[in-house]
Length: 467
Image 1 (cartoon, rainbow, N blue to C red):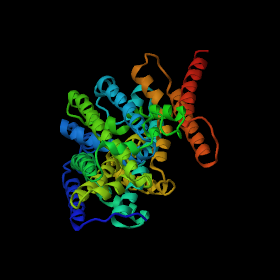
Image 2 (image 1 turned 90 degrees about the vertical axis):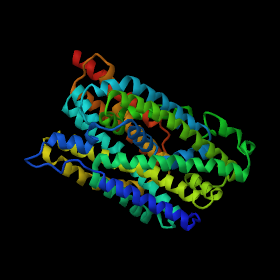
Image 3 (image 1 turned 135 degrees about the vertical axis):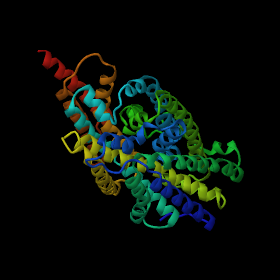
């Protein structure tokens, strides 16, 4: 078990942080109580799921940046092991998609006052496609990755086993998400955004003071500076990560915040400002990863960032840093459990004919169920990067082409053909991932095969319909 040596000041900072986010998350909520016969169900759901569509620019930027960067340990793991290919595959590819989303997707999304991606798919194709999309969303939004990250952090900080760490680390976000809805998520994200940036930024100057300037990077192997990595990744893997960067186009959190923004301008400018903050944060993480490898090449890659920070930071600064790590993970965890539960309640339960007045209560039950399932999945994975790669491959294989066709194609596609495309794309990617990961096969990358099958199925079904 790897732990860090923290001063009582450090634990005080962590404790104060938990009190702040719990207090904000628990008491900020002012949405209408779960509706009965005397309440308007649509209004209540707008308040609960979208914070009344009144999210301002600062809150929009903070919640999007912090939510989207929850895989901090995974990215630092990659930067430490592979070098600047982490910046290419986890940064550059994604920036391009964010900008595309801001200019070309936001106007189309804001044209309708909907709630979720399945709502959009129902508008494009029909209810069956919407329900199929919701099922995939439940997989995509499962927070197992962040439960695993939280377990690792609790092990490192408090010296407890990962199993207990998972239980402890998920309790606070679970409680305030249950109580406060989307408004609790976005307001706590603002606090987490501040800790996230300040905490990681502190590592850079203290590392330079302790170990020296940029000349330290001369100890890093040249392979770490290759855009294709250290030789372990093929061109197919690089291409797969380029395709996974399209995640924003099929991610419920992007759409939920776009719908919740107070105006079209807030949504568009918020995404562009968020991209700037992601760029800055990526530069810090990749620099720390390379610098840590130069100074301590024998660290556990998945724990390299916290262990290196522990070695260079003094008391108090160390507490702020570890609070920032916890905040980064929690900001994504709370968003994902809420969005995943929303897929169950708003997109599956309601679209199957469920009582609109019970959707909020169903959502709360689904939050608990989501956490339990994610816990079981987290126990099966050890690599954070493998986990994000798996769910990204499945989700994008299923949803990317139907979403892009809906937004930009003038041709009409049947509801059934899209359901088949979603199902075959997801099943293909999942099957190939399992065969490669657990049974020693060396098949082409799951996302490439999944997208090919998804596209071919749409094309074949369209030809058959014409004939």
